Length: 265
Ligand SMILES: Nc1nc(-c2ccc(Cl)c(S(N)(=O)=O)c2)cs1
Ligand SMILES: [Zn+2]
Image (cartoon, rainbow, N blue to C red; front, side):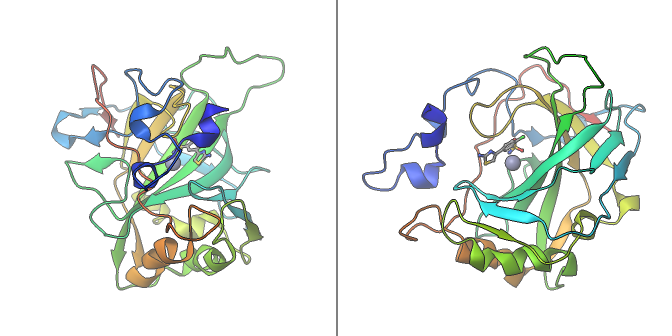
């Protein structure tokens, strides 16, 4: 399908590249409720319904499957990990987490907050859990809920990130798989009490087909990792089999907010 040839700008501008960069992405990528966006905090609207989340199974210790899917490093979740609360219509089951990054710490996140980009952005992708026979109409706007965490670099090692960082050298080539050592999602996130402050808006996948079916939650509290942990991603991972193009800048350009309102908890 044309999606298998989509790529980021850094790949598209390579001499004799045959992939389609963000300006050529198809599907819903040219519609008007796209992600990511710049969040102008002074224009966000307080929404008291945006209560804290309940995270179920985020403390489950497991040797998670990870893979280099040629666009990012992706950790498969599933099983019994899910969220509810956060003004979501029902509970949402965790499917996978992946990240976007650069090699400079002031760009690399997909969303920006008051124009500030972070070093990385971690996305925990959840799918709406339909109870019993209820069928999801195909274009429903809330099929997916992504929890987005900004990642800042500092000089403190983030122990919770180590299992993933240590697996990266086993994932250099695209379409390679591995497992991380025993770890849990919760250890990668900011402490729970800091997760009640977040932004909320209606948007899309930031990768083709850019389906406008995502309820976005962008947490205010960033994850902090050591600079060396951060640099491992662009050092160890490659976009291509020949290992000539380091995987970095897997970041979609900012999209127009249009007439959408961004809410805050
Ligand atoms: N092949 C790939 N798919 C994705 C993906 C899948 C689902 C979603 Cl929701 C997203 S995102 N960045 O909008 O969170 C990315 C990444 S790489
Ligand atoms: Zn993502």
